[in-house]
Image 1 (cartoon, rainbow, N blue to C red):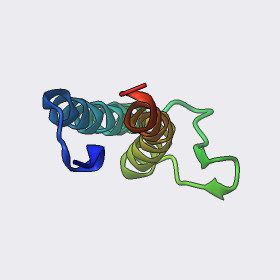
Image 2 (spheres, helix red, strand yellow):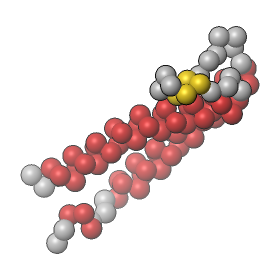
Image 3 (cartoon, rainbow, N blue to C red):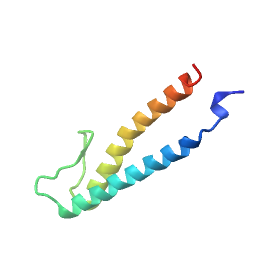
Length: 86
């Protein structure tokens, strides 16, 4: 039987934690955007300049935390699926 068809009980929990953490980053970005410090200039990956509004800072938080944690989570899932039975 293939290992990819099997689901582990922790997979769902890890996915839910990922969504919760990304949502918290968005909420905190919105709060920081509402406070709007004078030197707040969010840029996505140093390329795309976002406005220092609550929605712009929330988007910045969601995208940066989502991509950063998403890459790490994808690496963990890859290694776990490849070497779990070794």
